[in-house]
Image (cartoon, rainbow, N blue to C red):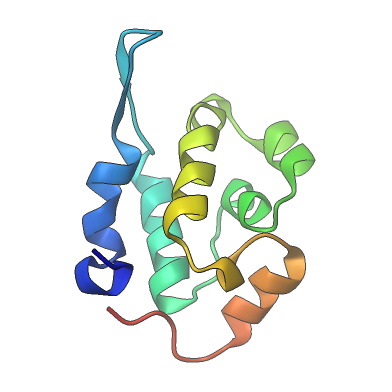
Length: 109
């Protein structure tokens, strides 16, 4: 099943909601971060969250030092989603991030 056939919003429940057996609790991405990431991927809108921007730019040091407890708890799932589902050109460096935001059109499902 391709990303275009299901869309990012339909991937989120499967991709982000995971049961952490080691801690015996459900781990998921907060809805505020989910929405920012979806707006970025679908409409190429610059995220207002510094944490999300740092992750998209592959700036781990800044993400970890500036993220709050909730953001840091979802860091692994956020990166796994990007690796598995986001277009490679949309993240991974400052250059990729800026190009994605500046390029018109966005990702259309």
